[in-house]
Length: 113
Length: 116
Image 1 (cartoon, rainbow over the protein chains, first blue to last red):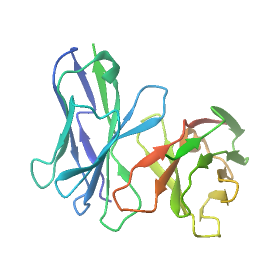
Image 2 (image 1 turned 180 degrees about the vertical axis):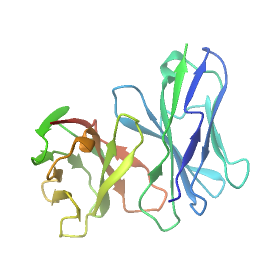
Image 3 (image 1 turned 180 degrees about the horizontal axis):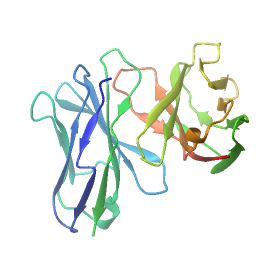
């Protein structure tokens, strides 16, 4: 069964460093998403991406965040200068063009020290 | 903006028994989707069940079923014959009908414990 793949599973970084979280969505999917879950809190939407551009972003997704689909398979989330409060689980998701269901990856746990 | 509320931070059930998890939501839209996702200790988000708002019939998936009350904006999940593997955090989520790329709005989650 196709699945969304995220790497790495755990990323540790120093405050102020740049990190790139990587995702490989399901191959025939057209819509891609990033969500964030701070430990013990609800899952929050960050950004959606379609046709090589951002289609929607939340107030959390400020100038320190960016997304990119550098090739036909990868979808990345970059955090330019990490803060302690960026420590969270980051989930990538995708859905097909006519699909309703978003399929999630296993997440990347980001720890900012 | 839509909001989703899960008022039960924790629930427990005995193995083989039935448990119901509550979810309410607020929206001004008439058409939308509702979902229940399961998050086991591995933290992967797994879809359990979905409901289209225009459908009056409640969705069922094996041991999982929902009680969708559109007028009351209520969407509860019933788990029958609970199994140890059902232990997880359960999130209720809302999605607008409008476009294929719409965000999911999640509730706070309910931590379900299954006792042997």
